[in-house]
Length: 270
Ligand SMILES: Cc1cc2nc3c(=O)[nH]c(=O)nc-3n(C[C@H](O)[C@H](O)[C@H](O)COP(=O)(O)O)c2cc1C
Image 1 (tube, rainbow, N blue to C red):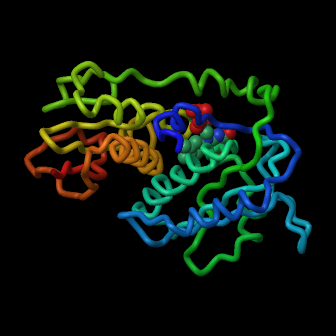
Image 2: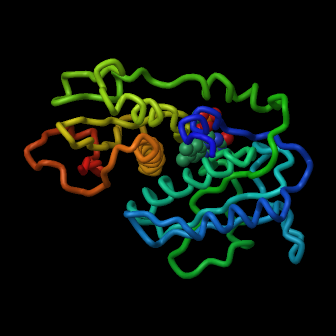
């Protein structure tokens, strides 16, 4: 099996696809994988893979020209609560990484898509809304003109340095990769997370065996980005044999700037 660390390094947003469909066997694998997924935040999320053209209604799922030739889309819905948004981040990113391991391309899209066309093809219950989608298909070798135009390559490459997002003991002490000990790799994998508009609104504070996750609201209001970051951190810890779990019980003495929103704490267990 491929290392999850390698899969994280391979993943990048793909917006231009080969015109060939995804084999049924591969789609079955993804659907079976989705069924195994659980999350500690909210049960009110749902995922479905839809073909790009709905045969019964002839509706073509739309992304305002941002995506070319995708044969299918992963559609994610939630109930609008903060925790279900966090759950979508955490869970859809697991699906994204699984699809990457199968050689498929994906791209998180929460803004530039036609919600109407996706909602019509995804029977929704009361209070349920399509939150995000991802195209799914085989990446075309060369990057599309469009991807170059929006600077997707440079956005993929650029990430904030360790010292701007990770802190130890207090907010005045930046954490470097060299000083991060066993968390060096999980934090590096977190740093490679995708985020809306590549804003990277993550702030983490390491206190002993606790790693607390915050959303920097002065950068972005998308709590979904923290869910994605938590996914990367956790799957890396799992692979490296670092045991722990997410809970909402940071030491209440810990202070943090009002522009940060406390989200969750990773508690290391023996
Ligand atoms: C929550 C979320 C929403 C996003 N929404 C869009 C979108 O609406 N349109 C788009 O073209 N890209 C969207 N992206 C892709 C980001 O721009 C991309 O992940 C980021 O620039 C980093 O590039 P990379 O994924 O290649 O590493 C979104 C990403 C995330 C995580």
